[in-house]
Image (cartoon, rainbow, N blue to C red; front, side, top):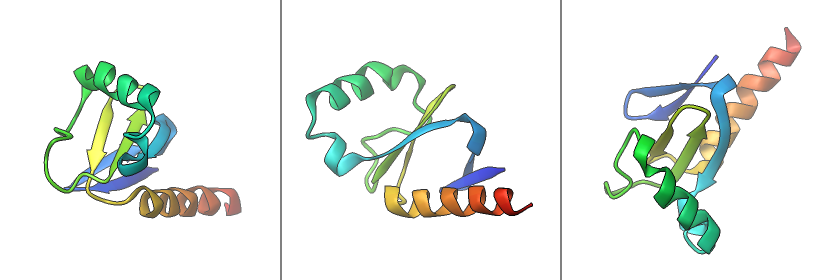
Amino acid sequence: MYLHIGNEMVVPCKEIIAILNLSTTSRAGVNSEFLNTANLKVKKDPRDEGCKSCIITDKEIYYSGISSGTLMKRASSIFSNLEKE
């Protein structure tokens, strides 16, 4: 299954490690340091206007204009549907 993260991009759910809220992540020094270090594998420029969340996978880092709360709801919906099958 895939998670749609906006801008015609989808991410395989099995690769997702974390979904971060950029407005709160930037407050913690260790989070900012991690994102600055990991920017080598970024799929979308975080300086683009409207980035609200960061999706960390085991292969790449994606930035999205969709809020982390909405992405989490989408992901939990996908996983709950898988459990029902």
